[in-house]
Length: 238
Image (cartoon, rainbow, N blue to C red; front, side, top):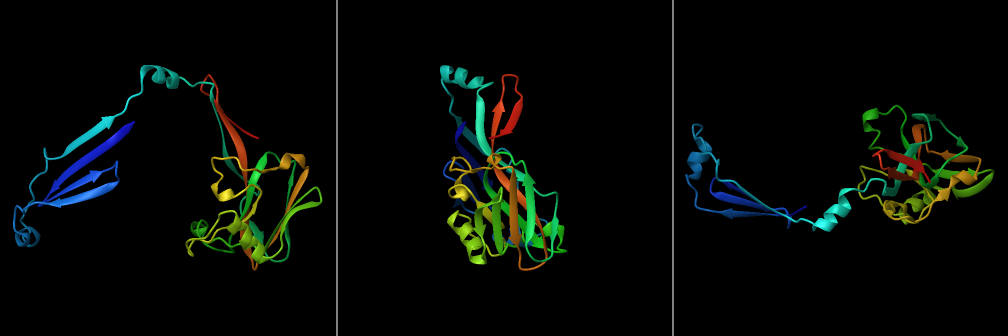
């Protein structure tokens, strides 16, 4: 672990000191070695070498021997819960008009949110990560029982806002979302709820858009990642 790091660089008439511990750069000036006109206008001018004038200093914080022994071997003890992004559709699907329906049979895992990523029909695929189109309605039904129905554009927008997905850049509009956890935008490391879809046999998503487009449906699920005593990594849905 590096606790402090300093780098000094000598330039023509200046000294640049970067302190990564404070994350600041300091610039100090010293008398110029040559006139500014000769250095900038004379093509034949060759600046001197800074070889041997750069220095590097770092301090390393070491653990005690008992702590080092405790942290050196955690085989079979590693077990965390993180997020898995599962595409429910098979590639880009075409939407023309009216109510679109996508069914999932025998769903698995706990879902914190479902994203519907839509792009303009016939758009350049290299721009698919930048120009998302929000749906005008978005509904989820489990075994013929409606779980959540965002049946207006205002409700679609409110779902994003109340869950922390606030658009800060007009050039990067967010996709539409159905959120099942509390404040989904900030629950990467803290469990804040979810929808156990394994309790249903069929999940149905209904949605509409204002015009023709292409879309994907992505489920954000909770998964447990383990490393066993042999070093093998496994990930299972909870």
